[in-house]
Amino acid sequence: MTRNIVVGVLALQGAFYEHFKLLQRASPEVAIDQDGEWEFVEVRTAQELERCDALIIPGGETESANRTKKGGQELIGGLDVRVNRNYFGRQTESFEAELALSFLSTKDGTGDVKPFNGIFIRAPVVEKVLPVIRGEPSSERAIDETVIAPSPSPEGERREQFLGPVEVMATLPGRSRTLRERVGAMGLEDEAGDIIAVKQGNVFGTSFHPELTEDARIHIWWLQQVKGMT
Image 1 (cartoon, rainbow, N blue to C red):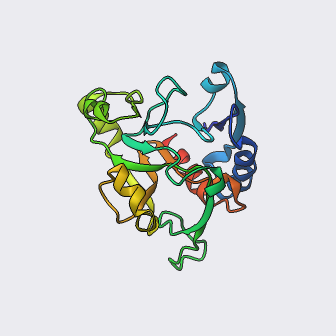
Image 2 (image 1 turned 120 degrees about the vertical axis):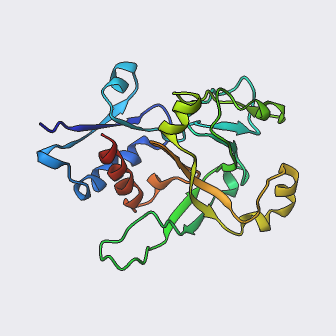
């Protein structure tokens, strides 16, 4: 017997309503077997969260973060990466860029993926992909202005088998070269491109705001991932 799949959108911050609209547009493209249905709910309480099979966190703080205030907003954890907040500058320096997202598919099967319009608002980047290790990445503690998020469970070898390594899903080429002085000051390890989307196990995160476009392809892809894991 197939049950409905419940997807929650954390409705405490960010553009949660915009996520709802794109989820509703995306859901007809991802049918659930045996007449199951998608159910989308706003999440504000622990009881509402318990109902969910998957969760979207608009503007969520999910990783270890550099250049952030200690004692400020707590981090959720869930990805083995170090993030530099507001890497591209203040809100007045927000921008849009066409992104080549190879994980998106096309209906016609041609293999040509239409660029996705990425909207970056006070956007972070992934400075470093961290190894899957037991407990907190202690080497990160020595970095100034770095706050460590709690490690996802399970830990150690079981965690590595469960989550696997971090997959880099998208980069933004060229920005590092145009921000060479800033990149040098931050000590980034690779100027081949800025990491703007990652996936580890059942956790997916982006630097840009897919909900602020009319393009539902990322939400379609994400619902396909949710369907495959439930």
